[in-house]
Length: 297
Image 1: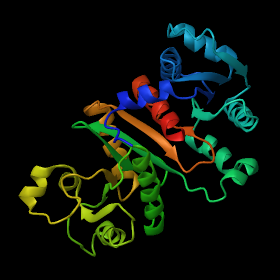
Image 2: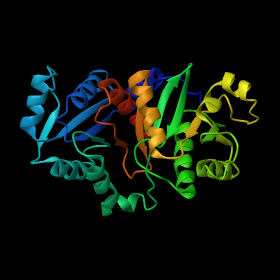
Image 3: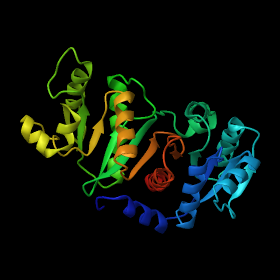
Image 4: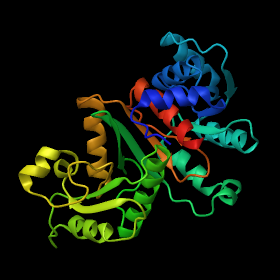
């Protein structure tokens, strides 16, 4: 399999694949509607909106978004919308779940607690994996949205989820950088200690390194100036951040300051799950739809 180096390739491959139906829970949100309509128009997927029907139609009208041709199922509130969305997925009337105007905690809790879904995936460990285009490559980092202060074993699971994404992108021997603020182990910086421990674990074909700082992990010039000796320095494919604050800050910088092509996916759930930030643009939501469907294929 060739390495996927850009989102255009992902979109094109999804178009050629078997069309899936995405069920959107609480769809009354402008950028969600814009992203899903674009995805439908480009032939990526079919969509089914669940939520307050009046609110969905009103949102579409106010935003001048044409949602004709998309079925809308009425629900009294966001919680009922999420419950109905899950029932549709379990009944085989949809393939992918998407978060709309509902809190992450609400919808995640339902996915994790659903006994029928658990039967399909007893060992659920969810993490949020972000993918961005940088210098003609796709780079992966985690976890900016779910795991707040992961311990070392949780960081290993986060890294394994990210490695699964890399494999589906055709990156067979990814370079994994476990990040800290420095490149040497300092007991006063716990993330540096854990990064070194993680780097020394068995990772199959992956090349692991740590601790590495963000600049030394991604930029060859920083790697050269600092004189870092590391197999992943300067050209990491996967960045594992020490906590949600660091990863989320990186996500917001990429999305808002640099405005890079960026997608976020939930990995490890019993169903393919598109979960984006409320503040994400319609374009980021569109790329997240395409990427989640591609990874689920």
